[in-house]
Image (cartoon, rainbow, N blue to C red):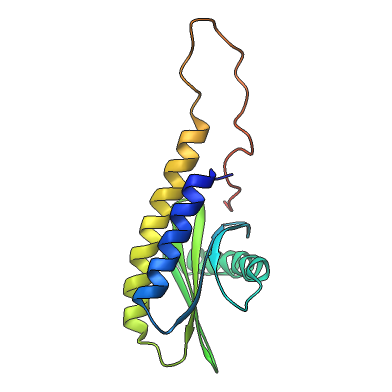
Amino acid sequence: MVPEAEVQDVLAELQRLRARVPLLAGALAASTDGLVLAQDTPGVEAEGVAALTAASLGVALRMAEATGRGGFRELLVRGESGYIATYAAGSSAVLTLLAEDRINVGRLHLEGRRASTRIGELVDAALQRTAQPAPASHAPRPRTPPPGGPLPHRT
């Protein structure tokens, strides 16, 4: 899993994003398999949204592959009352944004892409640190895997 310090940094990024984009109703960072990393989604069940994000990500990945459009970058869904936008955030996470219908979609994409890049950097760096063994002390110690290991992700 991602260490608590990075989770707090991801949450701070979500809160800054919501402050910059007033018509943003919620923001959630999750693993590609639907585990919540951090969320700022008042009135919305974050675990359910993360699970649905993972399901829609699976379909989006297959659609991009089947049509020769390359790797997944983003997904936009428009409902009667607003938008759900999902952005790739590094190699193991996604950012899902909930926006009101009156939002400027160009601004949503601009801010969502910036935030997803930053969140991806935070999560990937945290996972890389946990995957690397600790520096050896004077006496050799047996290696043990890091607690939790890397985030699960779709291949």
